[in-house]
Length: 369
Image 1: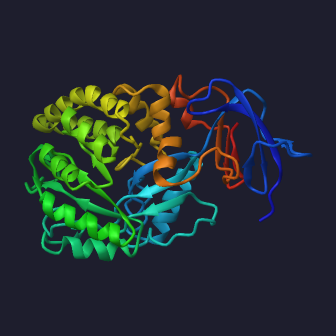
Image 2: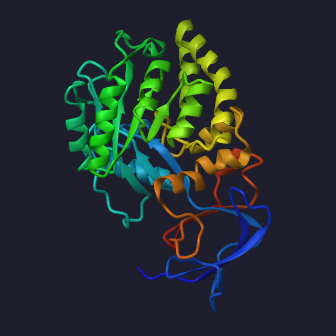
Image 3: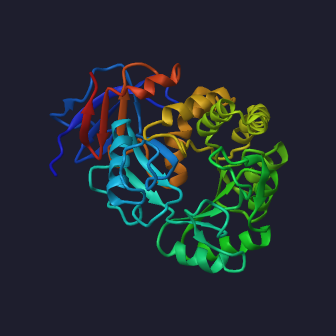
């Protein structure tokens, strides 16, 4: 596909404090002037290297689109809706089918780093998982690692029947010991994949940290000592706060005071623990989990509310996430994945919901009103 050449003068986010000049030629970013380049947008705006949602489930219909769960059609439509919101990179961290594996990087939709099927006990995750006993966890993890760059393990989940209510998340039972997780991590790493672990309870977080997994999803009951251990081990953290906020509202509406009280206590602790984790160098990633496609703006706002600086909260959904996932940001020679805003979204995360221009690989996807 032919590319045009462009010039842009904008403040480069999330940490820029003054306007910079960049050019786009052949679909890639340059900081060397390009003769004949057209102006991409009026000078004085703000540019991000494409938003990132590091915890999505493309095979599940959280946007209520009415498409079959696990289908290729649902995966494509979820990607399209993410693209329209300026989300240009996705980590699909657990699927109910293999429909998110092997997607092309050049089909005009957001790139996807998949994990394939969830690994959990047969009675541990609502029938969506690939049933895996503790004894077989390393073997199954190695097999999954040969299919995708990530392996997703469910380290804890309530075994109490919910009868249509929100699961009693505070009663989660640990599925795999630290020893089994350690063996699974070694097997996945040997096969070339990284391991993300769903862990909400303090005990499951402890097992995941001891196993030196690559990333912990949620870590809802994590304490200060655990985030210090995460930092020492180089473990990333995707807290999915906005999804948990939605769960809290639902628990209150459904009359589940035990779940609601537990979540409020967790949020109070996280306001201290999350900034501490970031200060120690833990990579914090923005992920929306059960929210509809394109809702990463809500996660950026939730990260700010829980103590991250506006720039760090935005980095969790852009440059920091790209760095952790091994995808270039706004740098010389990188694909021109850009999202532009007329005002600074660090001052108001809601600005992220209305990008003025979205560019993927040097191609203009949309221009806002």
